[in-house]
Image (cartoon, rainbow, N blue to C red; front, side):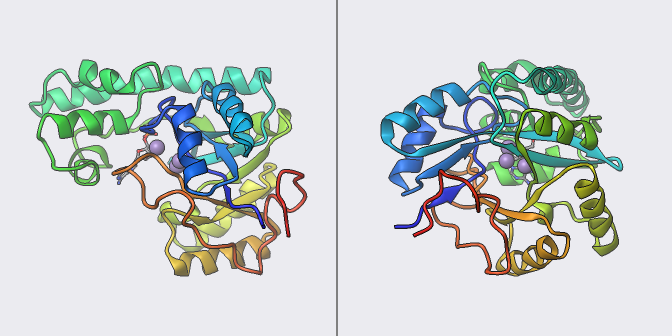
Length: 282
Ligand code: AMP
Ligand code: MN
Ligand code: MN
Ligand code: MN
């Protein structure tokens, strides 16, 4: 039987709802047998997930999803097969996490000007030991009754132009790709269909991403439509970038799609795992 692969997922180390260990158990239950954990800007869940994956007999890929700024836009770069404890990568991620604390304070101040008190403490409560991000503010705002669910709370408070949104300077895309490459990993442009770039800017992004050492793009991901699978399959082929596939699972109620439900990559694609020993072809 061929492997069922999922190369993008989140745990409580970032903004997922399941602990690394529970996430691996969930993946197994959904029939996934090659899993990457790719928490935002942190690798603190990888050892636990790797251990449980080994116990459960599935393949585990060490990953991370790095927040970057490119042309004043926020993009996400997934690193797959990153080595443990690579200094430039660890230092880079630590700096991004520090920036997240600064941004969280600005978001809380802005929400407080909009009449919403105590969102900093409230959101850190949801973040627990993990990184702080907009999803934790979203959970706090839903708890307080400011919106009915995560999706509507983002629309109302946490996107550009709304009170809880603060412009933020993340890592440079070139640096993030460098850190990943230095750790022996593969840099993958996450969910390109979510950036709303227009054709010219998308082509410019793919050109620069490739020149900077990026190797793959996500073609099949939870937030892409079936049309977008085809569209990005063609672009990956055109730019000679490999193709990746991952649910971007965050937990029930947060995800675009359940784990283990994504279709295969279109035939046109060269899978990012084409030469990985973890993947069984037959
Ligand atoms: P941050 O990196 O802190 O800005 O948060 C980004 C995260 O927020 C993403 O990884 C998603 O998990 C979540 N997110 C962003 N936009 C939305 C949305 N419209 N609805 C639900 N979750 C979202
Ligand atoms: Mn997230
Ligand atoms: Mn993302
Ligand atoms: Mn993600």
